Image 1 (spheres, rainbow, N blue to C red):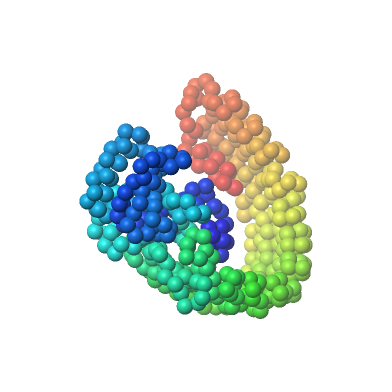
Image 2 (tube, one colour; image 1 turned 60 degrees about the horizontal axis):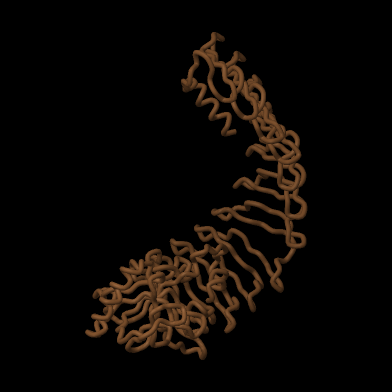
Length: 448
C-alpha cells in the first residue's frame, strides 16, 4: 500500500500536500551520540535494540525538532543525562526512509506509562489508512509487522486510537506498511466494529473474487465479482431495506449493453433505460410507485438531448422543457394540475436562465424577472397580488438595484419607495433596509 496505491484501493481520489507525512512513535533507549555532525549538520544517535525502520541509529537537528538553536542545545544536554542513566525515551520519527538512510526525529520526550507500556512502535494513520501526523490520526498500527502465513506477506491489523476497535485487517507484501501494497484480500470495519468492506484480492493486489460493501447499520449495499482487477458477471446494489436497487452485468471489465431497470426501496420499478456502448441511449423513463410514468427524457450518448416531460400521478403534464447536452435551452413550462400554465422560463444556448414569468392558479401574472447572457439581473423585476394589483417593482442594472424600488398594498396604495444608484439608497431613504415584506419577496425571487 504505497500511499498512492492504498488511496486508489480504498476509494480516496485526492491527496493533499501533507498526506505523505508519517509519524512512527517508539520507546527507545539512546546510548550514545556521534562525536561529529553528519554531512548535513545533523546529530546522529545510537540506540539499544533497533528502530521500527530496522536500523540502530536516529538523526535530528534543530530544524527537524522545530526548535531554535539555543533550545535545541539545551535539549541535547538533557538527553545526555538520559543517555547516561539509560532512561527510555518516547521518540517520534517522521517516517522510515525509502533508502538506507537514518530516520529523522521530529520529537523526543519522556516516556509515559500509556505510551511505553508494551515497547511497540506505532505508525499513525488517517481515516482511510495512509500515514499522517500523530496529532491528526484516528487510527494506529503496531510495528514491526508480524510475518503472515502467506509467503512474502506481513499481517496488518489497524485499530482506532480512541476505542481500540479493529478498523482494517489484511496483508501487505512489504514489512514496511507505507511502502507495501495490500495483497490477498482485506476487510475494513466501521468504528463500532461492524464490517464496512470485504475485498478479495490476488497476490498482486488486484481485486479477484467477490467484493461486498455494507452500510453502517450492517445492511448489504453492494456485491460483485472481480477477476484480475476487472468486474465480471452480475454486480448488485441494494437499498437499506434489502431490496435490489440495480443489477449490472459485466463482461471482460465492460458493462454489457441492453435494457436496464432500477428499483425503489420497496422493490417497485423506479427507472428504465437502454445502454449502448456503455452509455444511456434513447428514452429514460421514471415511474411512480403504481407503475405509471412520472418522467420521460430523451438521451443521446449518455447526455440529456431533446424533450423532457414530467407528469402528475393522473397522467397530466406537470412540466416540459428541452435540453441540449444536459443543459436547458429555449422555453420551459410548468403547469398546474388543471393544465393552466404555472411558469414560463426562457433559457439561453448556454443553459443560463434569461427570464421567468409566474402565474397564479387563476392565470394572473404574479412575477416577472429578466437576466442578461452573463446571468446579471436587468430591468424591472415585478410582482403582483393575485387580484392583479402591483405588489413590488425593483429596477436592476447589472444585478444591482439602480432606479426605483417600490411596494404597494393589496388595495393599490403606495406602501414605500426608494431610489437607488449602483446599489446604494439615495435621498430620504438613507441606508435604511427595505421593508421586511419586500426583503423576503426579493430573497424568494433570488431563490428561484
